[in-house]
Length: 388
Image (tube, rainbow, N blue to C red; front, side, top):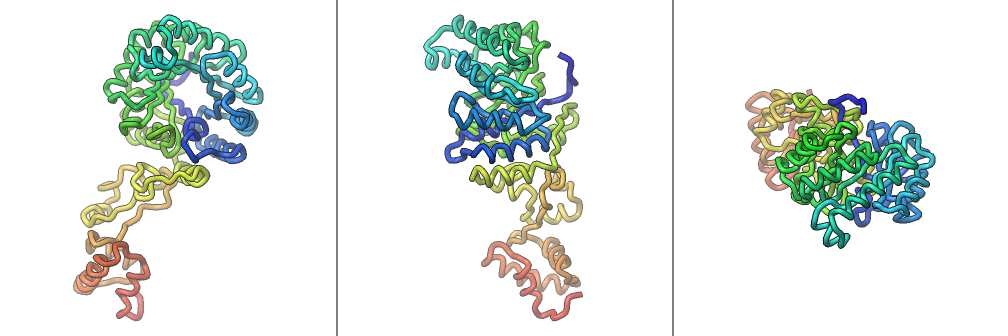
């Protein structure tokens, strides 16, 4: 497979895994609107749904296939012919179709989910890939719960499905269990011990149950994976999926990794807001990259350093992710430098003594009001009838 060895493919599952969040179901027109924005963002693969699960999901895959041109459109299945047939049918209008099929790979799932054996599961995995390959060239195989799977058995499974025709192998940390070094080592083991691994791209699909989804995804990339699966805002089952905006900005910030994507990061904030609204899923204010406080500075020490030189307290520029602008939030913890900045923004220039007097009044007000706005500042300066 010929591809840029430093290119990381971005697989967005906002419309599939993300939409499984209770209360976040989308209509087909809403999904199409998001899919078009994902195309503009530059994602490589859009996982549009799980066609066999419902008529609505099936129709969404059909309509998204018609609506987008550049991204691969992917449909999820289990490792059985009925699921795969539904996926093939739903993808008939896709310019670049992909079937994402798979089965459990951990002994926990083999025994307690499938009541089966390793040998039988391996046969089912290979059979599913071969069957899907008859209809669609691009086949991704997921080894569910790979995070807890025996690594030697996992390697056998990966080798077998690549031989059967899989073009991408997905190594999910389905339960968000792994530590980054464990997950990275698992990917490295596959790179070094699966003899046909050069025939497929390794993909990472990490969940955030322990808050490690992004760290695990980066560890996977550092050890040879070249596709990352995630969602906008990190939404998804339980505690969510890897946040695409976090991974992309980590790669941009840490260029020493030598990895890059085709993502237009300036579109992140607007798309984050769209998904927040349509899915009725608030974004926590302190969420990395797209949270409302991601570029807000309220500590006096931080504000002073930021105003002297942005890089003192920001490693990403707000405009790099389409964020409106950095904000200096005035609270009782703010210093004179921040107050002076806002007063000058409003047209007031004060000498040192005047600033000291106004600052004392400001602290008294801030202790009561918590957040100070422009109206409050104009009130503090009411004794000065004329602005400069």
